[in-house]
Amino acid sequence: MPFDFHSRAIKAAALIGSGLAQFARARRSSETTILSFHGLSENVGDSAVLDWTLHLPVEVFRNICSMLAKDYRVISMAELIEARSRGAHLPDNSVIITFDDGYASNYELAYPILREFDLHATVFVTTGFLDGEDMLWFQRVDLALGRTRKELLDWKINGKKLRLYLGTRELRQQSLVRLIPELKELPDTDLLGEVDRFERALEVNTPCIEDLPKSMRPMTWEMARVMSLSGYVDIGGHTHTHPILARCDSLAARAEISTCRDRIRAEIGDLPVAFCYPNGGSDDYTRETMLRVREAGFKAACTAISGRVTADVSMFELPRYGSPESVWEAEATVSGAFETLKDWRRSCLKAMSMI
Image (cartoon, rainbow, N blue to C red; front, side, top):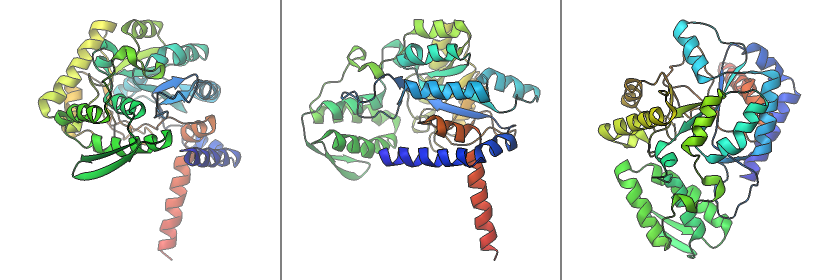
């Protein structure tokens, strides 16, 4: 992780320093960028949490917002939907800020910064998480690996044998990285049972919502209402229990989407207009999933597939960039510098192949 972070930061700084970001910003001004975040944190390194990639340091987010407020036009998902429905153009260099899951830090840390810089965001909430009924399943896995006293576990999953080393915090983090992708491949009907068995094998109890470390805690519905009423935040849908919808049968997927919609309407008072597919990769939703989202009344849906929003992009497959880890990375992303560099590389490779 440290090597990856530093290499990304150095590459982004080079693109900005070379002037490519400024060039790309002017050339690609008609494209919209959607950024995705999860939670924020005041102090990175809580020993109770193994995966800190979901919890961006709050000062990094503040610096990103300062840059966006100065050089870009931050709009809402509703503005994108309205413009697309009318065939109208969005302001140049438009950016949309989104958060997934519904962490309390969205209210406690992000919301004051959004107000400070007069920026808008959409928070896609997992409604069962806010209800206090369901922890996010990947949180349970993280806490089980972090709290067990075992130093080794042999685990069979998807026909594979995984030897999970747990002797140090670093080894536990590596085991988490190995295990999570395997769990995501399971049918939804098997996933929670597998997590139950995993906790038993590690001899840890299933934690309750109140037992979660601060960074993992959900926002309350009152927090969501306050943000919604302020006009700075829209509340969008992210299913009820956070399954990967492509791993659900048709009835379960429909229930996840409609229950999420109904809980938001009941608590916020308005129908949510935007949805976000859990996990959001190309294999994590289907054409039927998109149909179910549309039938539920949503006007747009976000993925986790990197890309920029152009006129030919489907409103139910909106691309988003993952959480930038520095203001340099954020600027290189929203300006289009990364994409411009990729285009140049493809052009060079094509030209070389014709020689």
